Image 1 (cartoon, rainbow, N blue to C red):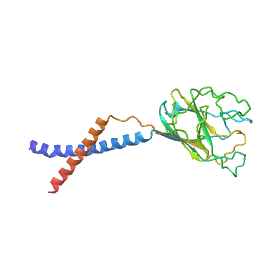
Image 2 (tube, helix red, strand yellow):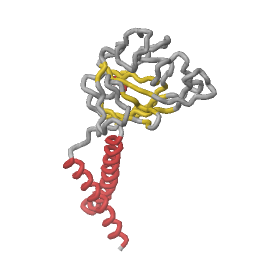
Image 3 (tube, rainbow, N blue to C red):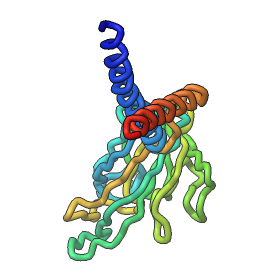
Image 4 (cartoon, rainbow, N blue to C red):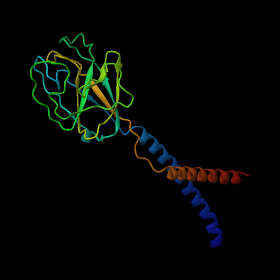
Length: 229
């Protein structure tokens, strides 16, 4: 009687465990696939009247983003994308301008503005580091002083590898005069997406997990078919 009881219960228990294990296996595979596709994504508003370069007019200082706080490390590849627009002439009814640039830095220091615009330079950012664009620079996208455009006229978006020792990134409106820049609806923003391949289990482990999931799922199918016959 005991042997009969065990013969009936153990297969059912194994079947239930098999189904749970199979579902878990496929869930883990899906999770690793999603996690490897994108590790971080966020959007932040940018004040178009703030600047990290010197200009003719007074403007608030750009506030750098801490890569550590964002969970982004040196060597990772990120995508930067501009959203929205602003008016470069103080007219909230005509917010059409959308150029945006950035520079990486080893620290968050930003020196005072000289009050003179002498081009887009990193004179105020002593820790500026040259950006690495794996896909190359579009025409006029990369300047010779560590500044690169995220968006400008005919393009929007930059794929960038975070330089070694970079801890911060300054992002701002690309302009020469900033005090009259207006973003009345607060839609001028930057999207920061980490697109580096995340750490995933070894291929042998993934293959074994997938094979086991297929095995137990097939075993469940054969048991149901046998019962039907």
